[in-house]
Image 1 (cartoon, rainbow, N blue to C red):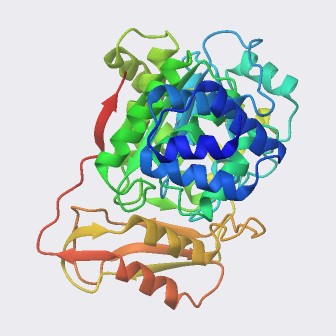
Image 2 (cartoon, one colour):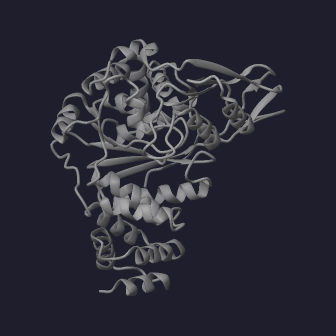
Image 3 (cartoon, rainbow, N blue to C red):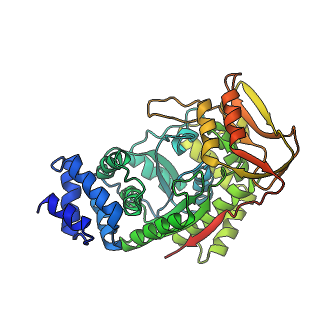
Length: 433
């Protein structure tokens, strides 16, 4: 078998055999296939697409390129959730303990974030003492006992994906749906989940800016998951504006606590209920999404979700008293209100650019080496569709320096006030098969 024949076959629109895909992934991971041939195949895939069977084969070849996490010792159906990312994406902090409170095992493998704010682990590490450096045995034991734990991603998980992603990043082949779908699903499957719920975001703050692209990606991933024996569902959610009000690590933890108390933003609460309902149904704890939603609402109302969050934090070395006293979270020196320049309605927010403004304060990383400032960020005071009067705060900037003029300008440039504004639809579509 020769790599040049595989490239030529895909370039000409042919369907690659399972053996050809396995040959490529194994050779590229081991270094016997050079970058220039791998990038040629990636470009051929970009233009010629792949069938569902090819994408499933590519996914599983990447799964088997390294270690897989064996979670068979965890009792029950393990459900994982993955978001394609956004701004103020606090859902996991609320979802994991809330779903675990209903007896669904949530064995979560997460990473640290590059971009606007930290990843799930960074957010949790803004709680003093919280850590994810636990062994696989400890991780499994915690999930069996308390139904929820978070562990850091290992470099040995789907190494082919890591190598191929780095190549795609420098060869203009990142936004290929077969390559995105196989990249995401290879990590989720290698992480050992029995069932997977996907939050595929769309809009300015999302990876997939167009709704039709987000739908196609979600449908592709759902088919991959089901094809390889993992029950998979997806929600297409809006990320044209930031989710919730808080953008920043400790600020998002505070918002997650508020949401578990039933006092969180409407959009974050609704997305948690939509995703959580799917997780509960996939785990066999409810037969319908409506029944699951009712159970989740009860776990918020009776405090079970909040109590589970406390146990989860304490189990991983964090100070559980921050749940009752969020003022113990890292606090910024300055809280600077940003007044609206005119009266009207907020008609548009460019989510990714407001995320960049938070990153400029130190809430995120531009490179892997950057250190995150857990305390800083932005809390929006208005969202799209809200009425605002001139001089009324549009947002509050939490900073550890007084001079934030460039951050103010960034926010002003990316919030539009006009004579009318309409709240965007949060859930665009639910994909179950």
